[in-house]
Image 1: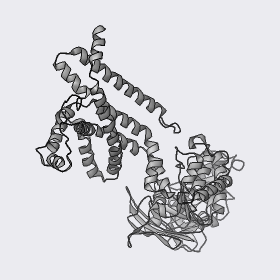
Image 2: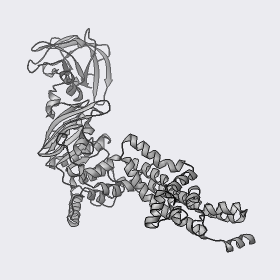
Image 3: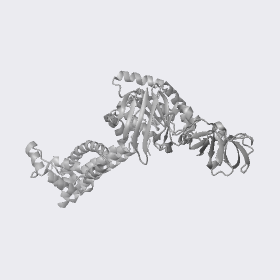
Image 4: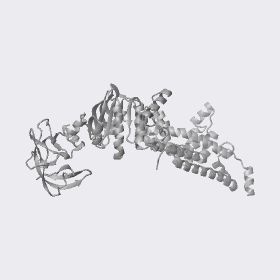
Length: 354
Length: 234
C-alpha cells in the first residue's frame, strides 16, 4: 500500500509544494512550525483543497486537478488524529466512537464493533463519560479508537503530542507507537520534534518553507543529512558555508579552518555541519585538532554546552560535553578540540539547488 | 384598587392572545429560516457575504415604519404581488393576522439570523473536520455536532426573537392595522388607549408586557449560565 502525494497550494506568504510517497509503516513529515505540514495533512484528508496536483492512495485517486477529481473527506478512508483530539464535547465516549462507525449501516454490527474497540483500547467503564471528564491519555485513546473504528487505509497524525508535558508524553507516545505498529496501512506523522520523529518513524520527509525534500530513512537523516535544511532540522548545531578545496579537504571561512573530511559523496556541497556532541577535547597533535578559546559555558540538564572560538573565526562552534568531562574548563581557557573527520557532514543547499 | 379590579373585569384580553400567538408563530418561522440562512451565508464568499449580510440585517436597524412601508409596497392589494396572492390563493396579508406574522417575522428575523451565525462561527472547525474524516454526512455533522456546540447562542437568539416579535409595533400597525380581536396586539392597544386618555388600561397592558419581558430576560440568563453542561467555557 502506498500514498502518493504531489500537490501545490498558495498559502499566506509562501507556496506549499510537496511531493512524496509514503509506503506502509510510519513516515514522518518533519519541519518547523509554519512550514505547511498540517496543511499537507488536511489536503490529504480532503478538508482543504490544493490548487493543483494529485493524491493517490493505494491506487485510488483521491484528488487530481487535471481529471477534476476531488473525493469528499467522507469517501477517502483516511483517518485523522487531531492535535487537540477534536472529540465531540456533547457526546459520550461511546457516542464518539460510534461517530467513527457512521459508514456502518447495520446497527448490531456497529454495537459489536463498539464493544470490541472499547476493550482493545482499554476504555471499558468510561463509555458514559464526556470528553471533559477524561484525562489526557484517555482522550487520546478515545481519539485513536474513534479514528480506527472506520478502518481507514491511511492515518494522519497531526503533532499528536505537542500539547503534553514530557512525562505524560513519553507514555502516550509509547501507546501510539504500539497502535501504529499494529496498523497495516500508511501512517503519516507530522511533527516539528526531531526526537519524536526519530523514535516513531521509519522514513522521513523534511519540509522547508512549504517545499519537501526527498523521503529518506529516518536513521539516514540523523546520521547523514544531505542538505543544510535537513541538518538544521535534525538538530545539527554547527553549520557554516564551506568550499571544497579538493576531495577530502574542505575550507570553512566562518570558522577560519581547513578540515580533513571523508572524500566520498560531496558533489555540490555548499556547507558543512558538525554535531555538537562530536566536538570533543583532544591532544594538540590529533587530526583536525583546533585550539579554541572558550567564550561561554552553559549548564544544561545533563550536559554542558561550550561556545568555542577558533583563532580568527567569525562565528563560534558549539560543543556539548557530559558534566564530568568538562568540569575543569573555565571561560577564557584555550583548549584543543577535535572536529572528527567522520563527523564532518558535507551539505548541499536545497533552496539554492532549485 | 377598586378601579383596577373594575378595569380587569371589563378588559378585552384578545391583545394578549394575539400577541402571544403572533410571537410564537413568528419565532418558529424565524428559527428555521434564520438557521438555514446563517448556514447559507457562512458558505458564501467574502464580498457577496458582506452584501447579503447587510441586506438581511437591515430590518433590525431600520425604523419599523420603513420596513412597514416596504411590506405595504409588496403586499398591498393594489400592488402586483398582493393582488396576485389575493386573486389566486385568497391570501390577504394587509389588515389581517397574517400581516401581524409577516411584520413581526421580518423585524425579528435578523436577531435569529445574526445570533445563529455568530454561534455557528465560534464552533471549533476541527470538530467539523473530524466529523468529515469520520465519514459523517454534512447533515449529520450539522445536527449532531454544530448545533449542539452552538446551542446556547441559538437558544438566546430564539428567545430574543420571540421578545422582539411579541412587542412589534411600527410595521405591524402599517401592514396589519389595529383591528380589535383580529390584529390588535398589546403594543397597538397601549398606543390606542393612551390616545384616548385611558392611562389606567394602558398601565395594565404595560404591566403585562413588563412581566413577560422580565421573564424572558431571566430565562436568557438561566440558559446562558447552564450553557452546554458538558462543555467547559470561559
